[in-house]
Length: 470
Ligand SMILES: C[S@@+](CC[C@H](N)C(=O)[O-])C[C@H]1O[C@@H](n2cnc3c(N)ncnc32)[C@H](O)[C@@H]1O
Image (cartoon, rainbow, N blue to C red; front, side, top):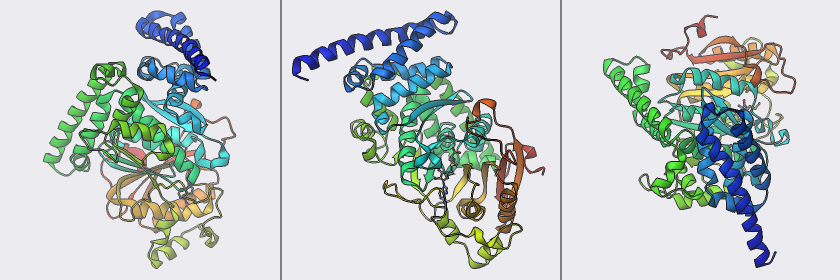
């Protein structure tokens, strides 16, 4: 294309983009009670925009026309799933993340949007969001205290839905982990999409509330563990402040970002990423962050708001750390075949870390360990209990949601937990109809929520009294 052609292409693109964005603005101004027509026009416009964003000219024009803050603000103004999904695709295209391919979708749990990009199953089982992930997300959204103010480890994150939601629910920090290259790269993209989204989609106040939760995390956690009146008072104060900040967040509109001079995409994304590596806490280093985000492969593995990290973590590491008596106890647990201790590499997913993700520190311990759909091979019967034993701090809790494909394997895993001094409570759960994937998902034992604590240092104040009833 010569210069004149490029100019003409940009001119046409800018007129079309402006028309589509106007339809979105009209829908937003009209508000909820405006009837079907503005919604239909907005849906049509966003769909056309997404199709056009295949071309760089349109991406440039959309960014310059303020598509990012406008579309981000739309996430708060509609619960129409099709529109939300198209808006997510448009935002991902504007951020450059679509270049890595995959379908980007927005899932909403208790009103909180989580934007996830899925890849092909050839990239590993973690390239998809599984039903168990949605199910645990709904449990956490209904009971935010499971994670609020706590240090959370997600194991076998895949696309990271549960960990990302935990961060948005006010966890002090969330570490998202997996052990395969393609999954880790995608996980990082998902983290970034929600760093931008959480500041923008939920409002800056949520990021601030999360920061606040981090600051008050130990007080809130201490009170939640029943550590005295002072702790309880501190937690009540923290909860009140968090409520106020969430209310502020509700009132905040990403389009207002222009008022503080950050109506351009890079600034907005930079703010959302605020303060992660290479920048100071006060001055998030928006330019550097945005450059990194626009080029996902060069992006760092941490974001500050809400506080999340992606780390390489192979569960085999925790199994290897067991004392020899613990290993013997595991292998002697009822129903655990000795062949369960297979060599690494026998799994349908494989460990590889060419992505360059930093490893999870060997000494890191967590208040809460979460994991979904992580019990589908015999070796996991040994590995998952080893992980919980290693990573849970005394008094901490693990909450898993398992698809029980083979009842004998699941029962052996419960026995393996007990063999390591871990107490498990089981609760059958029925996933929401909308969360059931279109591939065959009728499992022998259905879906089970598994609550785990250390037998000698139990967690206090579980979010449900009936978790240990069985
Ligand atoms: C079925 S997927 C579930 C993904 C996600 N939790 C969900 O529910 O959507 C299982 C995940 O566990 C990871 N995984 C399997 N074995 C692992 C191991 N030994 N160490 C770490 N991650 C592992 C896979 O890479 C994959 O991301």
